[in-house]
Image (cartoon, rainbow, N blue to C red; front, top):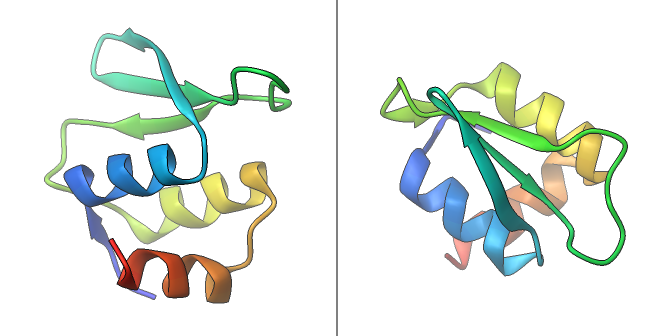
Length: 76
């Protein structure tokens, strides 16, 4: 797994059903509209790419394995 561009990560989140719920300063927050997560998925838009640590933390929040993520991101 490697860092992913912000644009591609946004497309990934939308492809699995997450919706942008709000922006707080430079952080975009995403959540499922019908069944909220324990905490929203967060993207820091100060960087051109989403760092690996942020990807892995967000995957744990979503309940997805790195292998599943890699397969889905290839198709985006």
